[in-house]
Image (cartoon, rainbow, N blue to C red):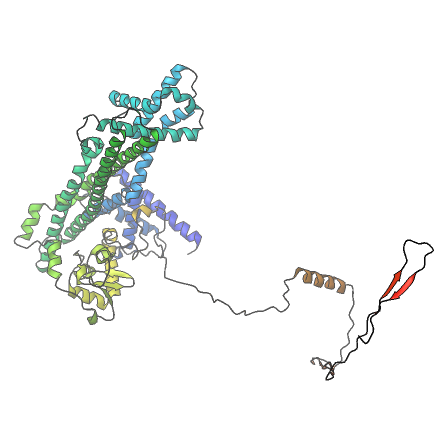
Length: 622
């Protein structure tokens, strides 16, 4: 597909989404571009609607697409639409604990940013300006520490008294000559020390009595800690009970079908199952927060005891001893505040999920479900697990497939299961019924993905032709788009992205990116396939050749060729140079004579003196 074609299709889709959003607004419904973009893709993917994503949409196709999307978006009693909205809300607002805490820290730092800017940019000239600046520092510390409201007079008085003990107003002059970066650093340092001092003072109000840690905890933590986990557990219990009833009713209707809206019952089942998945994630985070709070409380108690032992009844203590303890108290207090904010976020998400399960509750009341169930047994997920726990796959029976068993697999309970732990065979064979799989039966590993099943029979049949069942599950998801998120089928349906990644203008037909494991290896000593004999690495040799070529340019070559010499090879001859010859006698003979030595006497001291010559050569016969 060319770039121009892709841009044209993206422009068409953008116009369709804009038109649908406008039509919904005219009819009194406010919808987001993300919701409309997902709905457009879901309608196009549904084979019952007859769209072809590989062809350009005609005017009639666009009109039909808009009408179908509007009908789905305007449905007032649609558990399917509520499930999609719930998935979209959760995907947009929920993230990891680390990212939640990063956002909490950003908000905490931005809250006193205006006061911090006024402090670091101020220029003090008079006593009134100095007093105003000191009050601003107290306000900044109060905002940053979170120990009370900045409008609370008692809290401000406590902060001012603690600040005065570690940073008197007389030291403002030294503070003002600092650079802006150093001022901000000192403000944060003062905030931590003052917070630690206030916590210590608050703990010491009872004199020698043991301080109750709950009095030192942030007020927000007192409110949300005991409430959040219980609220999530209660709602999770309600959702699970309703899901078990829907499952039992759908199983019964397979055998005895009446005039019951089976399609709406399945949509309601998907709705409460998705709500259950989200509640389990919130409950896991809430329990983790409770554990962190308990750890922080223990550390806070030990640090407070250590600080009391350090200070005791002394009138003066070295700052190098107590200031690190004050900072440690402040950090633990900030950790408790972070947990309180995180619990508050989880509580808000829990509250905002409730409207998305209201339609199915209004449509199928408990009395209505109980009347349809009559005397049928409602099994819990744990009961279904217990019933199938005796069944176990014997790998020798299915040698063509690879099975993971709890006895032979490490971290068996932490395996990333496909379809969110739902049995794929039951989903296909029983027309969309969701039953949880039991990993203890055996986990099928097929193409690096793991599948669980509700019974041994389901596992054997799925393993006999897994690719066909995987394709059937994807087809079921095209009919019920809420299953894409519930069963985590974004890889199987690559053209449908998670809600947080959907772009309103992207094309309908996004080809999946083919990925595979690959590797490369080079030989230790590769063999050269093309060796250039004339290659020269020496710079001086290259210069010599260049000079030679430059000299050849001034020469002229004459040559003559005859018919006989045409296309004949050149003849060459080679001669062998004579080798060096030498002879040697048996014994070397030699003679030695004495070295002549002559001494001349009388050469010095006398002008007319007589020179005497003395022969000192040794005789030959010696």
